[in-house]
Image (cartoon, rainbow, N blue to C red; front, side):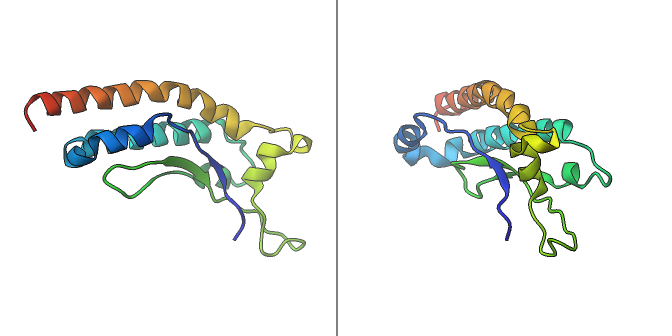
Length: 141
């Protein structure tokens, strides 16, 4: 299987937060998961909007968001499964990765440049989730 083009963001203090709220995971799971899903979808939409358009448009169609299947997801990712198959490469190669990292093709950084601003806005989505968690907690579990 060809390597996928994936971009991850590290949330500092997440492990400490999970340790502190582990007894109340059921209370905070829904707002947290909604925030992580929103961040991933925003990043995927930004990547789709910035994707180079070729003959087929498959690159834009093959970009998707993925969130860990857990009540309290630890990660969210934006991935692309686009492959280019030819006579020379019958198994295919990951052309989104090629376009992102190769200066030769004129689209260097299209994926990274699209997603980086979304990571800066992630704090706002997590703050909204934090406010929802505070509301739930203040209602008395």
